[in-house]
Length: 474
Image (cartoon, rainbow, N blue to C red; front, side, top):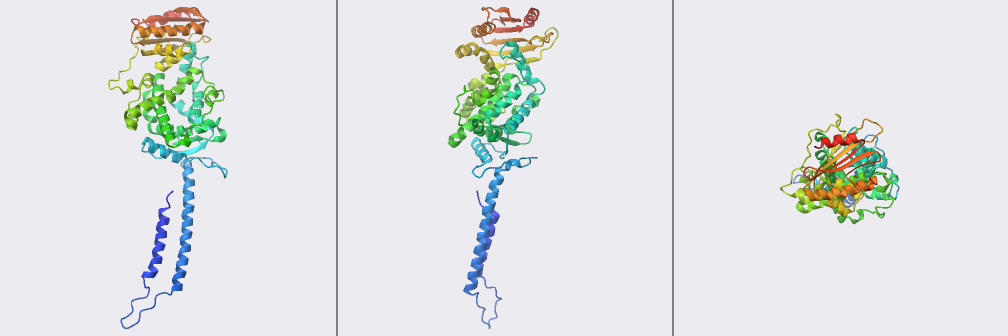
Protein backbone atom coordinates (compact mmCIF):
# COMPACT_ATOMS: atom_id res chain seq x y z
CA UNK A 1 0.00 0.00 0.00
CA UNK A 2 1.32 3.51 -0.84
CA UNK A 3 2.15 5.90 2.07
CA UNK A 4 -0.37 8.58 2.85
CA UNK A 5 0.35 11.58 0.52
CA UNK A 6 -0.41 14.09 3.28
CA UNK A 7 2.17 12.51 5.57
CA UNK A 8 4.81 12.51 2.82
CA UNK A 9 4.11 16.19 2.15
CA UNK A 10 4.57 17.01 5.83
CA UNK A 11 7.90 15.13 5.91
CA UNK A 12 9.12 17.05 2.87
CA UNK A 13 8.17 20.34 4.50
CA UNK A 14 10.10 19.42 7.65
CA UNK A 15 13.16 18.43 5.63
CA UNK A 16 12.87 21.72 3.80
CA UNK A 17 13.01 23.48 7.13
CA UNK A 18 16.29 21.78 7.97
CA UNK A 19 17.81 22.96 4.72
CA UNK A 20 16.54 26.46 5.38
CA UNK A 21 18.59 26.68 8.57
CA UNK A 22 21.72 26.53 6.49
CA UNK A 23 20.55 28.84 3.73
CA UNK A 24 18.70 31.57 5.58
CA UNK A 25 20.15 34.23 7.91
CA UNK A 26 17.42 35.26 10.36
CA UNK A 27 19.11 38.62 11.22
CA UNK A 28 18.02 41.74 9.31
CA UNK A 29 20.46 43.14 6.77
CA UNK A 30 23.06 45.19 8.65
CA UNK A 31 24.05 48.67 7.53
CA UNK A 32 27.16 48.85 5.44
CA UNK A 33 29.07 50.35 8.28
CA UNK A 34 28.18 47.48 10.70
CA UNK A 35 29.48 43.88 10.91
CA UNK A 36 26.85 41.13 10.02
CA UNK A 37 25.71 38.87 12.88
CA UNK A 38 27.25 35.42 13.15
CA UNK A 39 25.21 32.40 11.96
CA UNK A 40 23.91 29.97 14.55
CA UNK A 41 26.56 27.87 16.20
CA UNK A 42 27.28 24.31 15.06
CA UNK A 43 25.86 22.96 18.34
CA UNK A 44 22.54 24.76 17.81
CA UNK A 45 22.29 23.35 14.31
CA UNK A 46 23.01 19.84 15.54
CA UNK A 47 20.29 20.16 18.18
CA UNK A 48 17.83 21.31 15.53
CA UNK A 49 18.72 18.34 13.31
CA UNK A 50 18.27 15.85 16.15
CA UNK A 51 14.88 17.40 16.95
CA UNK A 52 13.74 17.23 13.35
CA UNK A 53 14.94 13.62 13.01
CA UNK A 54 12.77 12.73 15.99
CA UNK A 55 9.81 14.44 14.38
CA UNK A 56 10.44 12.55 11.13
CA UNK A 57 10.53 9.22 12.98
CA UNK A 58 7.28 10.12 14.73
CA UNK A 59 5.61 11.05 11.44
CA UNK A 60 6.83 7.86 9.79
CA UNK A 61 5.35 5.92 12.67
CA UNK A 62 2.05 7.72 12.13
CA UNK A 63 2.27 6.86 8.44
CA UNK A 64 2.78 3.17 9.25
CA UNK A 65 -0.21 3.29 11.59
CA UNK A 66 -2.33 4.83 8.84
CA UNK A 67 -1.25 2.09 6.46
CA UNK A 68 -2.37 -0.55 8.95
CA UNK A 69 -5.64 1.28 9.50
CA UNK A 70 -6.24 1.54 5.75
CA UNK A 71 -5.65 -2.20 5.38
CA UNK A 72 -8.16 -2.91 8.14
CA UNK A 73 -10.70 -0.55 6.57
CA UNK A 74 -10.27 -2.29 3.22
CA UNK A 75 -11.03 -5.64 4.84
CA UNK A 76 -14.11 -4.14 6.52
CA UNK A 77 -15.39 -2.39 3.42
CA UNK A 78 -18.44 -4.61 3.56
CA UNK A 79 -19.72 -2.76 6.62
CA UNK A 80 -20.18 0.50 4.72
CA UNK A 81 -23.83 1.44 4.51
CA UNK A 82 -24.93 -1.68 6.38
CA UNK A 83 -27.24 -1.70 9.37
CA UNK A 84 -26.66 -4.01 12.32
CA UNK A 85 -23.55 -5.43 10.67
CA UNK A 86 -21.78 -7.92 12.92
CA UNK A 87 -18.04 -7.56 13.44
CA UNK A 88 -16.10 -10.68 12.47
CA UNK A 89 -13.47 -11.51 15.08
CA UNK A 90 -10.33 -13.23 13.82
CA UNK A 91 -7.80 -15.20 15.79
CA UNK A 92 -4.22 -13.94 15.93
CA UNK A 93 -3.13 -16.57 13.40
CA UNK A 94 -6.06 -15.99 11.02
CA UNK A 95 -5.81 -13.85 7.92
CA UNK A 96 -9.03 -12.36 6.60
CA UNK A 97 -9.52 -13.19 2.90
CA UNK A 98 -9.05 -10.11 0.75
CA UNK A 99 -12.32 -10.41 -1.18
CA UNK A 100 -12.20 -6.74 -2.15
CA UNK A 101 -8.74 -7.17 -3.64
CA UNK A 102 -9.87 -10.37 -5.35
CA UNK A 103 -12.85 -8.52 -6.78
CA UNK A 104 -10.61 -5.74 -8.10
CA UNK A 105 -8.32 -8.28 -9.74
CA UNK A 106 -11.26 -10.08 -11.33
CA UNK A 107 -12.81 -6.86 -12.59
CA UNK A 108 -9.49 -5.93 -14.16
CA UNK A 109 -9.21 -9.41 -15.70
CA UNK A 110 -12.83 -9.34 -16.88
CA UNK A 111 -12.42 -5.71 -18.06
CA UNK A 112 -15.42 -4.42 -16.12
CA UNK A 113 -15.41 -0.73 -15.18
CA UNK A 114 -17.06 -0.75 -11.75
CA UNK A 115 -16.35 -0.02 -8.12
CA UNK A 116 -15.43 -3.00 -5.91
CA UNK A 117 -18.28 -4.67 -4.08
CA UNK A 118 -18.77 -4.17 -0.36
CA UNK A 119 -18.31 -7.54 1.34
CA UNK A 120 -19.35 -9.04 4.63
CA UNK A 121 -19.25 -12.50 6.16
CA UNK A 122 -22.53 -14.31 6.89
CA UNK A 123 -23.64 -17.78 7.88
CA UNK A 124 -24.39 -20.28 5.14
CA UNK A 125 -28.05 -20.23 6.21
CA UNK A 126 -28.21 -16.43 5.80
CA UNK A 127 -26.63 -16.72 2.35
CA UNK A 128 -29.26 -19.29 1.38
CA UNK A 129 -31.99 -16.93 2.61
CA UNK A 130 -30.57 -14.08 0.50
CA UNK A 131 -30.53 -16.33 -2.58
CA UNK A 132 -34.08 -17.51 -1.84
CA UNK A 133 -35.30 -13.93 -1.60
CA UNK A 134 -33.81 -13.17 -5.03
CA UNK A 135 -35.31 -16.32 -6.55
CA UNK A 136 -38.74 -15.42 -5.20
CA UNK A 137 -38.51 -12.01 -6.81
CA UNK A 138 -37.74 -13.71 -10.11
CA UNK A 139 -40.67 -16.13 -9.78
CA UNK A 140 -43.21 -14.52 -7.43
CA UNK A 141 -46.19 -16.14 -5.76
CA UNK A 142 -46.53 -19.82 -6.78
CA UNK A 143 -44.99 -19.51 -10.23
CA UNK A 144 -41.99 -21.73 -9.39
CA UNK A 145 -44.22 -24.53 -8.07
CA UNK A 146 -46.08 -24.99 -11.35
CA UNK A 147 -43.36 -26.81 -13.30
CA UNK A 148 -42.73 -29.43 -10.56
CA UNK A 149 -46.48 -30.14 -10.50
CA UNK A 150 -46.42 -30.90 -14.22
CA UNK A 151 -43.23 -32.96 -13.96
CA UNK A 152 -44.74 -35.00 -11.14
CA UNK A 153 -47.85 -35.64 -13.26
CA UNK A 154 -45.57 -36.86 -16.07
CA UNK A 155 -43.74 -39.12 -13.61
CA UNK A 156 -40.39 -37.38 -14.14
CA UNK A 157 -40.00 -36.44 -10.46
CA UNK A 158 -41.43 -38.30 -7.44
CA UNK A 159 -43.77 -35.53 -6.23
CA UNK A 160 -44.66 -31.88 -6.61
CA UNK A 161 -42.43 -29.67 -4.47
CA UNK A 162 -41.45 -26.05 -3.93
CA UNK A 163 -38.09 -26.00 -5.76
CA UNK A 164 -36.84 -22.58 -4.66
CA UNK A 165 -35.54 -23.43 -1.15
CA UNK A 166 -33.65 -26.38 -2.63
CA UNK A 167 -32.30 -24.24 -5.46
CA UNK A 168 -31.12 -21.65 -2.94
CA UNK A 169 -29.33 -24.34 -0.91
CA UNK A 170 -27.75 -25.72 -4.08
CA UNK A 171 -26.57 -22.33 -5.33
CA UNK A 172 -25.07 -21.47 -1.94
CA UNK A 173 -22.95 -24.61 -2.17
CA UNK A 174 -22.00 -24.11 -5.81
CA UNK A 175 -21.00 -20.46 -5.34
CA UNK A 176 -19.88 -20.18 -1.73
CA UNK A 177 -21.54 -16.77 -1.43
CA UNK A 178 -24.06 -14.41 -2.99
CA UNK A 179 -24.41 -10.81 -4.11
CA UNK A 180 -27.40 -9.27 -2.34
CA UNK A 181 -28.68 -6.63 -4.75
CA UNK A 182 -31.01 -5.04 -2.18
CA UNK A 183 -28.11 -4.07 0.11
CA UNK A 184 -25.51 -3.94 -2.69
CA UNK A 185 -23.30 -6.25 -0.62
CA UNK A 186 -21.36 -9.42 -1.37
CA UNK A 187 -22.10 -12.06 1.26
CA UNK A 188 -19.35 -14.63 1.80
CA UNK A 189 -19.93 -17.75 3.88
CA UNK A 190 -18.41 -17.88 7.35
CA UNK A 191 -16.18 -21.01 7.34
CA UNK A 192 -17.47 -21.92 10.81
CA UNK A 193 -20.98 -22.37 9.33
CA UNK A 194 -20.05 -23.98 5.98
CA UNK A 195 -21.44 -27.45 5.33
CA UNK A 196 -18.11 -28.40 3.72
CA UNK A 197 -14.67 -26.83 3.12
CA UNK A 198 -15.45 -27.16 -0.58
CA UNK A 199 -18.19 -24.54 -0.18
CA UNK A 200 -15.77 -21.91 1.15
CA UNK A 201 -13.23 -22.79 -1.55
CA UNK A 202 -15.86 -21.81 -4.15
CA UNK A 203 -15.93 -18.17 -3.00
CA UNK A 204 -13.91 -16.85 -5.98
CA UNK A 205 -16.77 -18.07 -8.19
CA UNK A 206 -19.22 -16.18 -5.97
CA UNK A 207 -17.17 -12.98 -6.35
CA UNK A 208 -17.15 -13.32 -10.15
CA UNK A 209 -20.85 -14.20 -10.27
CA UNK A 210 -21.72 -11.33 -7.94
CA UNK A 211 -19.88 -8.76 -10.04
CA UNK A 212 -21.68 -9.92 -13.19
CA UNK A 213 -25.05 -10.08 -11.45
CA UNK A 214 -24.60 -6.50 -10.23
CA UNK A 215 -23.55 -5.39 -13.72
CA UNK A 216 -26.00 -7.33 -15.90
CA UNK A 217 -28.70 -8.80 -13.64
CA UNK A 218 -31.26 -6.11 -14.44
CA UNK A 219 -30.61 -6.61 -18.16
CA UNK A 220 -31.14 -10.37 -18.08
CA UNK A 221 -34.01 -10.59 -15.63
CA UNK A 222 -36.09 -7.45 -16.10
CA UNK A 223 -39.54 -7.75 -14.51
CA UNK A 224 -41.22 -6.24 -17.56
CA UNK A 225 -40.34 -9.36 -19.50
CA UNK A 226 -42.95 -11.23 -17.49
CA UNK A 227 -42.61 -14.92 -16.70
CA UNK A 228 -39.84 -16.53 -18.72
CA UNK A 229 -40.22 -20.04 -20.09
CA UNK A 230 -38.11 -22.73 -18.45
CA UNK A 231 -36.00 -22.95 -21.60
CA UNK A 232 -35.35 -19.20 -21.90
CA UNK A 233 -34.67 -18.73 -18.18
CA UNK A 234 -32.15 -21.58 -18.18
CA UNK A 235 -30.47 -20.12 -21.27
CA UNK A 236 -30.15 -16.65 -19.70
CA UNK A 237 -28.81 -18.13 -16.49
CA UNK A 238 -26.27 -20.05 -18.57
CA UNK A 239 -24.82 -16.82 -19.97
CA UNK A 240 -24.10 -15.22 -16.60
CA UNK A 241 -23.14 -18.47 -14.83
CA UNK A 242 -20.85 -19.52 -17.66
CA UNK A 243 -19.30 -16.05 -17.76
CA UNK A 244 -18.61 -16.25 -14.01
CA UNK A 245 -17.16 -19.75 -14.32
CA UNK A 246 -14.87 -18.61 -17.14
CA UNK A 247 -13.73 -15.52 -15.19
CA UNK A 248 -13.04 -17.67 -12.15
CA UNK A 249 -11.09 -20.14 -14.31
CA UNK A 250 -8.94 -17.43 -15.88
CA UNK A 251 -8.32 -15.90 -12.45
CA UNK A 252 -7.25 -19.32 -11.13
CA UNK A 253 -4.79 -19.64 -14.00
CA UNK A 254 -3.08 -16.48 -12.75
CA UNK A 255 -3.54 -17.36 -9.06
CA UNK A 256 -3.08 -21.15 -8.69
CA UNK A 257 -3.66 -20.93 -4.93
CA UNK A 258 -7.31 -20.10 -5.67
CA UNK A 259 -7.94 -23.30 -7.65
CA UNK A 260 -11.00 -25.17 -6.30
CA UNK A 261 -10.02 -27.89 -3.84
CA UNK A 262 -12.69 -30.48 -4.60
CA UNK A 263 -11.32 -33.85 -3.53
CA UNK A 264 -14.71 -35.57 -3.31
CA UNK A 265 -16.13 -37.25 -6.41
CA UNK A 266 -19.48 -35.96 -7.62
CA UNK A 267 -21.15 -39.24 -6.71
CA UNK A 268 -19.99 -39.19 -3.08
CA UNK A 269 -22.97 -38.74 -0.72
CA UNK A 270 -20.86 -36.34 1.36
CA UNK A 271 -20.33 -34.02 -1.60
CA UNK A 272 -22.02 -30.67 -0.82
CA UNK A 273 -24.28 -30.84 -3.87
CA UNK A 274 -25.57 -34.25 -2.81
CA UNK A 275 -26.55 -32.87 0.59
CA UNK A 276 -29.49 -31.09 -1.06
CA UNK A 277 -32.41 -33.56 -1.44
CA UNK A 278 -33.46 -32.17 -4.81
CA UNK A 279 -35.03 -34.39 -7.50
CA UNK A 280 -32.45 -35.36 -10.11
CA UNK A 281 -34.34 -33.77 -12.99
CA UNK A 282 -34.57 -30.39 -11.24
CA UNK A 283 -30.99 -30.58 -9.99
CA UNK A 284 -29.66 -31.14 -13.49
CA UNK A 285 -31.67 -28.17 -14.74
CA UNK A 286 -30.22 -26.02 -11.94
CA UNK A 287 -26.61 -27.08 -12.62
CA UNK A 288 -26.81 -26.83 -16.42
CA UNK A 289 -26.04 -23.05 -16.46
CA UNK A 290 -22.68 -23.68 -14.76
CA UNK A 291 -21.74 -26.89 -16.59
CA UNK A 292 -22.71 -26.14 -20.19
CA UNK A 293 -22.68 -22.38 -19.63
CA UNK A 294 -18.91 -22.50 -19.13
CA UNK A 295 -18.44 -24.03 -22.60
CA UNK A 296 -20.82 -21.46 -24.07
CA UNK A 297 -18.95 -18.53 -22.49
CA UNK A 298 -15.60 -20.00 -23.53
CA UNK A 299 -16.78 -20.19 -27.15
CA UNK A 300 -17.96 -16.57 -27.09
CA UNK A 301 -14.67 -15.48 -25.50
CA UNK A 302 -12.70 -17.32 -28.18
CA UNK A 303 -14.79 -15.65 -30.89
CA UNK A 304 -14.33 -12.08 -29.70
CA UNK A 305 -12.77 -11.92 -26.25
CA UNK A 306 -14.69 -10.14 -23.48
CA UNK A 307 -16.41 -7.63 -25.81
CA UNK A 308 -18.22 -10.60 -27.36
CA UNK A 309 -19.35 -11.75 -23.91
CA UNK A 310 -20.46 -8.22 -23.02
CA UNK A 311 -22.50 -8.07 -26.20
CA UNK A 312 -24.20 -11.30 -25.19
CA UNK A 313 -26.10 -9.53 -22.42
CA UNK A 314 -27.86 -7.26 -24.90
CA UNK A 315 -28.54 -10.30 -27.10
CA UNK A 316 -28.87 -13.23 -24.68
CA UNK A 317 -29.40 -16.82 -25.86
CA UNK A 318 -33.07 -17.63 -26.35
CA UNK A 319 -32.89 -21.37 -25.72
CA UNK A 320 -30.74 -24.11 -24.21
CA UNK A 321 -30.24 -25.36 -27.77
CA UNK A 322 -28.15 -22.22 -28.45
CA UNK A 323 -26.16 -22.83 -25.27
CA UNK A 324 -25.49 -26.45 -26.26
CA UNK A 325 -24.56 -25.36 -29.81
CA UNK A 326 -22.94 -21.89 -29.55
CA UNK A 327 -22.28 -21.80 -33.29
CA UNK A 328 -26.05 -21.50 -33.77
CA UNK A 329 -26.08 -18.48 -31.46
CA UNK A 330 -23.09 -16.90 -33.23
CA UNK A 331 -24.56 -17.44 -36.69
CA UNK A 332 -25.38 -14.03 -38.24
CA UNK A 333 -28.48 -15.68 -39.69
CA UNK A 334 -29.65 -16.86 -36.31
CA UNK A 335 -32.98 -18.66 -36.83
CA UNK A 336 -36.02 -17.10 -35.21
CA UNK A 337 -37.67 -19.12 -32.41
CA UNK A 338 -40.54 -21.37 -33.47
CA UNK A 339 -43.77 -21.35 -31.46
CA UNK A 340 -46.47 -24.01 -31.40
CA UNK A 341 -49.68 -22.01 -31.74
CA UNK A 342 -53.02 -23.39 -30.62
CA UNK A 343 -56.49 -21.92 -31.12
CA UNK A 344 -57.71 -22.90 -27.67
CA UNK A 345 -55.89 -24.28 -24.62
CA UNK A 346 -58.84 -24.60 -22.24
CA UNK A 347 -59.74 -28.11 -21.13
CA UNK A 348 -63.45 -28.44 -20.33
CA UNK A 349 -63.53 -24.66 -20.03
CA UNK A 350 -60.57 -24.54 -17.60
CA UNK A 351 -57.41 -22.66 -18.54
CA UNK A 352 -54.08 -24.42 -17.90
CA UNK A 353 -52.16 -23.42 -14.78
CA UNK A 354 -48.90 -23.95 -16.71
CA UNK A 355 -48.07 -23.01 -20.30
CA UNK A 356 -44.34 -23.56 -20.72
CA UNK A 357 -41.51 -24.46 -23.08
CA UNK A 358 -38.99 -26.98 -21.72
CA UNK A 359 -36.36 -26.82 -24.44
CA UNK A 360 -33.66 -29.14 -25.65
CA UNK A 361 -31.78 -29.82 -22.43
CA UNK A 362 -34.92 -30.67 -20.45
CA UNK A 363 -35.95 -32.94 -23.31
CA UNK A 364 -32.58 -34.74 -23.25
CA UNK A 365 -32.78 -35.05 -19.46
CA UNK A 366 -36.21 -36.64 -19.69
CA UNK A 367 -35.06 -39.22 -22.26
CA UNK A 368 -31.88 -40.07 -20.33
CA UNK A 369 -33.93 -41.54 -17.49
CA UNK A 370 -34.46 -44.75 -19.47
CA UNK A 371 -32.15 -44.38 -22.49
CA UNK A 372 -28.42 -44.21 -23.05
CA UNK A 373 -26.90 -40.77 -23.44
CA UNK A 374 -26.38 -41.45 -27.14
CA UNK A 375 -30.02 -42.38 -27.77
CA UNK A 376 -31.24 -39.44 -25.72
CA UNK A 377 -29.09 -37.07 -27.79
CA UNK A 378 -30.32 -38.64 -31.03
CA UNK A 379 -33.90 -38.28 -29.85
CA UNK A 380 -33.61 -34.51 -29.48
CA UNK A 381 -31.21 -33.66 -32.31
CA UNK A 382 -33.90 -32.24 -34.59
CA UNK A 383 -36.09 -30.58 -31.94
CA UNK A 384 -37.52 -27.29 -33.24
CA UNK A 385 -40.06 -26.37 -30.54
CA UNK A 386 -42.14 -27.76 -27.70
CA UNK A 387 -45.06 -26.69 -25.54
CA UNK A 388 -46.06 -28.07 -22.14
CA UNK A 389 -49.61 -27.52 -20.84
CA UNK A 390 -50.94 -28.65 -17.46
CA UNK A 391 -54.42 -28.50 -15.92
CA UNK A 392 -55.86 -29.22 -12.52
CA UNK A 393 -58.48 -31.94 -12.16
CA UNK A 394 -62.01 -31.70 -10.80
CA UNK A 395 -61.06 -34.37 -8.27
CA UNK A 396 -58.68 -32.83 -5.74
CA UNK A 397 -57.16 -36.24 -4.97
CA UNK A 398 -56.17 -36.92 -8.59
CA UNK A 399 -52.90 -35.81 -10.14
CA UNK A 400 -52.76 -32.93 -12.57
CA UNK A 401 -53.19 -33.58 -16.29
CA UNK A 402 -50.43 -32.84 -18.75
CA UNK A 403 -50.00 -32.45 -22.50
CA UNK A 404 -46.56 -32.09 -24.11
CA UNK A 405 -46.38 -31.28 -27.82
CA UNK A 406 -42.99 -31.52 -29.54
CA UNK A 407 -42.11 -30.50 -33.09
CA UNK A 408 -39.08 -31.68 -35.10
CA UNK A 409 -37.28 -30.72 -38.29
CA UNK A 410 -38.41 -33.82 -40.16
CA UNK A 411 -40.03 -37.22 -39.82
CA UNK A 412 -36.79 -39.10 -39.09
CA UNK A 413 -35.99 -36.81 -36.13
CA UNK A 414 -39.52 -37.26 -34.79
CA UNK A 415 -39.13 -41.04 -35.22
CA UNK A 416 -36.00 -41.06 -33.04
CA UNK A 417 -37.73 -39.05 -30.31
CA UNK A 418 -40.85 -41.23 -30.45
CA UNK A 419 -38.78 -44.39 -30.03
CA UNK A 420 -36.82 -43.00 -27.08
CA UNK A 421 -39.91 -41.59 -25.33
CA UNK A 422 -41.81 -44.84 -25.83
CA UNK A 423 -38.95 -46.60 -24.06
CA UNK A 424 -39.35 -44.19 -21.13
CA UNK A 425 -43.10 -44.78 -20.88
CA UNK A 426 -42.75 -48.55 -21.09
CA UNK A 427 -40.10 -48.64 -18.35
CA UNK A 428 -41.82 -46.13 -16.07
CA UNK A 429 -45.28 -47.70 -16.20
CA UNK A 430 -43.92 -51.26 -16.64
CA UNK A 431 -46.33 -52.01 -19.47
CA UNK A 432 -45.91 -53.72 -22.86
CA UNK A 433 -44.93 -51.35 -25.61
CA UNK A 434 -47.86 -49.46 -27.05
CA UNK A 435 -48.75 -45.94 -28.11
CA UNK A 436 -51.84 -45.80 -25.87
CA UNK A 437 -52.58 -47.50 -22.55
CA UNK A 438 -54.01 -47.19 -19.06
CA UNK A 439 -51.76 -47.85 -16.04
CA UNK A 440 -51.69 -46.83 -12.38
CA UNK A 441 -54.86 -44.78 -12.81
CA UNK A 442 -53.32 -42.74 -15.65
CA UNK A 443 -54.46 -42.61 -19.28
CA UNK A 444 -51.42 -42.20 -21.51
CA UNK A 445 -51.00 -41.63 -25.24
CA UNK A 446 -47.94 -41.04 -27.44
CA UNK A 447 -49.20 -39.94 -30.85
CA UNK A 448 -47.77 -38.66 -34.12
CA UNK A 449 -49.20 -35.45 -35.58
CA UNK A 450 -48.32 -32.31 -37.55
CA UNK A 451 -47.47 -34.12 -40.74
CA UNK A 452 -45.46 -36.79 -38.87
CA UNK A 453 -43.01 -34.09 -37.66
CA UNK A 454 -44.74 -33.77 -34.28
CA UNK A 455 -45.05 -36.07 -31.27
CA UNK A 456 -47.82 -35.57 -28.72
CA UNK A 457 -47.56 -36.98 -25.19
CA UNK A 458 -50.75 -37.03 -23.10
CA UNK A 459 -50.90 -38.07 -19.45
CA UNK A 460 -54.46 -37.66 -18.12
CA UNK A 461 -56.41 -38.74 -15.06
CA UNK A 462 -59.40 -40.04 -17.09
CA UNK A 463 -60.27 -41.36 -20.50
CA UNK A 464 -62.58 -38.39 -21.12
CA UNK A 465 -59.78 -35.91 -20.33
CA UNK A 466 -57.44 -37.75 -22.69
CA UNK A 467 -60.02 -37.59 -25.48
CA UNK A 468 -60.54 -33.87 -24.86
CA UNK A 469 -56.78 -33.23 -25.08
CA UNK A 470 -56.64 -34.98 -28.42
CA UNK A 471 -59.34 -32.67 -29.73
CA UNK A 472 -57.39 -29.62 -28.55
CA UNK A 473 -54.40 -30.68 -30.64
CA UNK A 474 -56.41 -31.11 -33.82
